[in-house]
Image 1 (cartoon, rainbow, N blue to C red):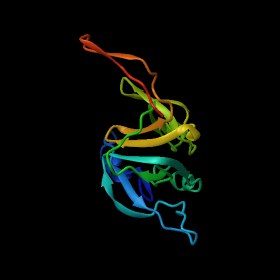
Image 2 (cartoon, rainbow, N blue to C red):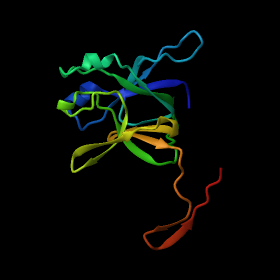
Image 3 (spheres, rainbow, N blue to C red):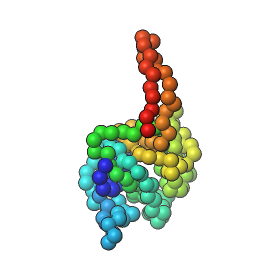
Image 4 (cartoon, one colour):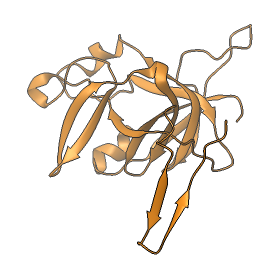
Length: 172
């Protein structure tokens, strides 16, 4: 992993095709003490896949006024973390999450809170808020963003196509 970067959904591409997830990647500026500023930063590029470790949810409440009910699009929240550059994805429970700050009459919740969600029969179902203290990484894909918690899947016997079994032991 390396220095902090920010990742947020590219709203221009989302406006053209809401089902397409393209992520903007930026490098935030630094304070005098070397810590990253809580801002999006300078755009580095776009991607359909990236993984961040030690994620932090950053929300700018003032942007809610910009978004308002008028349908204006503005980045109000993003994830800041350390990029996994070797293709590594941490093991743990992986859950889809979203943020939807538009007004309730337009299907939003009018708050800057990341929520777990699921898609059932093409409809988004909003679930409980993301508990960031348990999230060890975020995987951004072309299908959405997934929080990965630090819970390792249960150890046991796994069967593949009914032809053999493999005992897995987790060593920490």
